[in-house]
Length: 470
Image 1 (cartoon, rainbow, N blue to C red):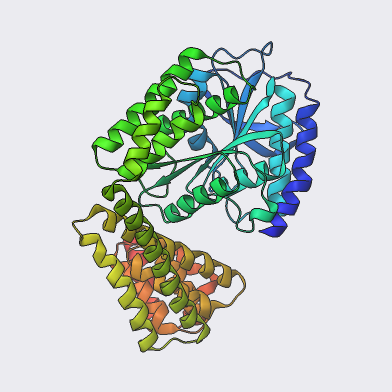
Image 2: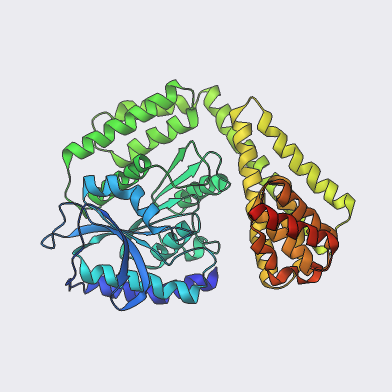
């Protein structure tokens, strides 16, 4: 990721210059109040983005803008999530249709730059309120851009945080509001990010929601934009709206009191701390400070903090342990039954936590399994692309323990096994595909299956799929 940061710096310095010399050259018509699925960049039609303009948009005013990045280039879907807040508060939303995970940086960066350039040339942008947002790999892109460019005032980071190489020595402070689902494999990462940014004196708010690795709801994204508005007012980048500020104070206080009543002591304390940070001049903060101080010395709060830290430590330790065992299996070349049994046993132990009556244990299980599954998939794809099919088949094989009915994964595993002459592994995965009702016989025409095409079992599977397809 270090190379990624350097490239983003050189590319986005240009973007800062563009915004600084912004002159609207709009000569196209884009309907306001609706999501425009595809806008082609004027200077290069290969690059595109989805767009939302508030229904009262006018070139005579300056508008805040949020540049959005989705890991699968689902630009319309990602844009739609921001629409209620963008309409309510007057934000332009532009989501890249080219940015996705696995796209080489040398291809991605021109697309990002083209979107920035196109938006600033067509629409009236408030250069004091330019933001980025993203989900998963898109969140890392959004953060990387803001890290290197002072033009960006804040980031909405969903399901992931900063690029992997960022540390105290190369960090630039900016406003960041993060989201993590309680079953998101990056949940612990986001909690650790909150600590890191606090140590660096950066302004972050972390919001946890009941979900997995996914975009937050439109309501939650509205809350994120309200948080950005609050920071803009505090920084003098936007005129203060006393009614809005009053509503935000009431919201935070209500949330904190509700968490306290429900026994969620650590989150209640976080909410009270937010009030003290964001509304230091409010006449109620003295009482809130006393409430927070009283809460922090209770045995229940101290126990809850220790239990949370202990659980997160156990979770990261378990992820590292299982990952290490999987990598040992890959390095052994052809892992024997003993290694497979060790890994399988560890995964079964975590899967059994799904039956726990404790919702925290169930969520932890989902996070660990999600982390291991994604690790296996990403490394499996990486080794497959490098033509190390043996390693790829091992990673995919362990992922199948977690997700045994994933048809796409079974097909990948079968291809990798065929390419490394593991005929039994290939046939076994293909037979499982057939049992699961897979009918896409054309997929067996892939050249990856050439090494097993003459095997009688493969030909039988091929005939069965062809018959099912007709």
